[in-house]
Length: 195
Image: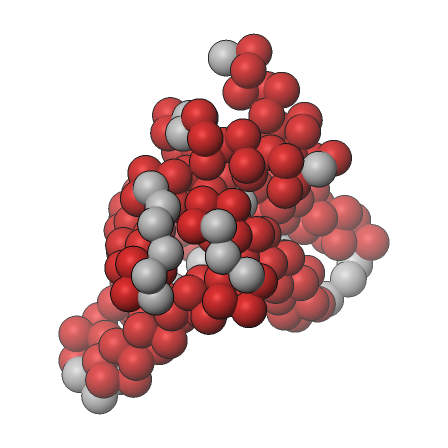
């Protein structure tokens, strides 16, 4: 566990070196721990600044969070499969477990969502700034970290890694476009809500 905390400290100071070490050592348990904590922080941070009432917030946190967490893990694993498959199609060799590890570890910046939401709530800043400004900024940062992780895992250039990491987004957006016309998609949107 000490090695894992060293990895987290190295990640904060030098992400490329930390991702190189994570790709080599594959700390899958630690990676999922970071993913779960980051997902919880993101969900709680979003809920803190939500305009809904306290009963609805409690329902979202207790009732829907396990469903959202399961959905998040499925998306993580599906994204790892698509990235690994796309990298293999482009002729690069890497490890599928390492892909899961770097995707999970790279969710660490979302740990900032709850403290940011508390700060914004205290200062009276609009929840739209939190959701779109901070959320989008963190998403772009995580995307770049995923590109660096793909570079380290598959030994590819930045441009090729960028395209490989973009593949799951293109695939999932295509699926959502197709599902957008179906009642199933509307049911999923209704169940997951805006949390």
